[in-house]
Image (cartoon, helix red, strand yellow):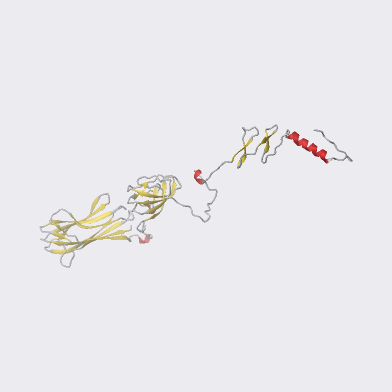
Length: 346
């Protein structure tokens, strides 16, 4: 390209100068030109090459395999929804913007040592097998509704329960849990279906108060003429709120003694699914002919369990002849016997 010098007094011809500029541009781009909208020029390091416009919504992308190091390509789709991100994290406090964050009802979970499903956060627990631990990831917040009676076994690490004691569930009970670490679960709330408190709300100064009362009675007659202890049909059941509770058993048994028969009265306690224990046994009830009386007694029992308990009375003819008639109606007397169970807080 020719070079033009100017000195004072020379006349500049604009058209000629612009031609020089055009020539410079022509030399730079090796005579390349484009008239298509969107086309661009890209360098291969030595010269400039035309790059035709790409497809709508495509973007210019670096690609070392291309001569010019760039190409048109579809934009990265990224995440179309949060489901595709298996480990999302927040950079700050989540603002729900006046909306709610929904929860899901998941699949049923079998009792025993269940694995907490990942398809929800509210589950029905089926079966009656004791639960002493869960298989669950850390930082899970979940709810369980129990379909029947089973025992939740307290453990300060694996399964930390309110009141630091075992819980016997009932159908419809709901519990709320949080896993502080893998397989380490804290029960933060427990609601009984019948609305009763899990543990009586009393201060340390009120220990020893009555937590619940159960009444049982019968008028079904039983006649005894042997020395074998026989059920009298008088029975009642109770489930203590804590293993430290005691049960006060009050008995009033309607008995007729005939032929100077001497009676033997016993109280049996049975733990549901467990052992039966005689907690009271006394003789010398009677020893008079044709005597009608209410034999009353009481026992303070320490069952040390939150499993259901059943108490019942048994009687036998211990000595002499004759018959012992239990709950025999006579005139205006229905022969009714009663049993009262009182749970006493420790």
